[in-house]
Image (cartoon, helix red, strand yellow):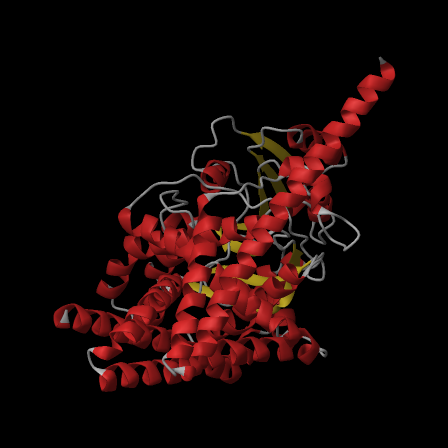
Length: 516
C-alpha cells in the first residue's frame, strides 16, 4: 500500500507541476504581448511605401473550401467578389466537396459571376480524399496566383483585405504567410458564443501577437490568411495525415526557414459554433490534430538549428491541449490523495495545500490572459468579463472530450475530418433548431462519462470538506460545475432537437390527414 500511495503522490505532484507550467506560460505570453504588440499592427506609412515598391498588384488566387455549406455559401462568394482588388489580377476557386443542395447554389453563383467578368471556377470532387487539405492541394495545381488567399465558408473578408496584406510580402522574400484576426458574426447569440468569443480573442490578440511579435513561431489558422504559393510548395504542399493541416503546413514552412507576419487589426468576421456539440466537435479536431502534428514534427523541430527559445515555445504550443488530460488526471487523483491521508497525514496535507496554491496561480493566469485581450479590443471589456465564468466552465467541461482526442492521437487512431456546422446564426432572433437538417445532435457515451465525472468530483468535494481540506474545495467545485454545465448544454440541445422533430412530424401528419 505504501508503494502504491507513493506512486499516486508522485504522479499527482508531476501533474500539478505540469499545470503550473502551463499557467506560468500564459503569464509569459501576456508579458510578450504587452512588450511586442506594436510589431503586429499595420503601419500605414510603411504600407504606402510597400505599395509603391510593388509597382503593380500581383496575381492572387482565392481558395474557398466548402462542404455542405448551404446557409453561408452565397454570402461567402458574394463577399469575396466584392473585394477591392483589380479584377484582372484575381482568380477565385470554389472548392466544393458538397453532397447536398450547396452544389446547386454554388454552381449558380459561379456562373453568374463568371458572366460578370470574374475569373472564377467551380471545382467539385466526388471522393473528398484528404478533405479540406486534399481540396486545397488539388486546386493549387490550377492556381494562377503568386499568392493564395484562403477563406472558410463562414468568413466574411473585408473589402481591403488583399490591399492590406499582400504588400507585406514585399518586405522580405522569405515572408511566406500573412495571418489576420478572426472576428465574430454571432458572439451575442448565446452565453456559449459569448464565452467562445472571449476564448478566440485571447488566442488572436495575446498568443499570436506574443509569438509573432517576439520572433517566436506562430501558425496559420486555416482561414483568413494569405500564403506565398512558393512557400506552400517548398514546405511540401498540403498534407492530410493530421486533422490540423494548417498547423502542420505552418511548422513545416517554418522549419524550411520561412517567416510569418500576423496583423491583428485586419479582421475577418466568422461564425462561432452555436451549439455545444458543434463546439466539442471543433475542439476535438483541433486537439487531436495538434497532437498528431506534434508527433510528426516535434523531433524535427528539436533537431533543427533554431534557437532554444523557439524550440521550447513550439513544443509548448504543439502540446497545448495536454492541459486537458492533466485536468482529468488531477481530478481523478485528488480523491485517492485525500483518502490516503491516513498513510501519512503530513505528506498528504502538504501535497494538498501545495496543489491548491499552485492551482490558484494557474487558475488566475487565464483570467488575466483574457482580461488583457478584452481590454485591448472593447471599451466595455469589464462587462464582457462577466462571461468569464462560463468560459472557465466550458473550458473545464470539455476536458474529457479533448482527452479522448489526445489519446487517439498518441495511439495513432485514425478518425474522419468532421466539419463544424455553419448555420448563419447571426442574431438572437434566429434559431439553430430551424436549421437542424444541417446539424447533428445526439446523446452519446461522452455525455454520460462527463456527468459521471462531475458526480465523482462532487463526491471528492464532499470528502475534502469532511477532511477539512477546505483550500482545495473551490477548485473541485469549479471542475464539477464545468462538467455538469457542458452536460446540461448537450442534453438541452438534444431535447430541443427531439421535440422539434416530433413537432415537425405532427405538422406533416396533420397536413396529410387534412388533404385526405
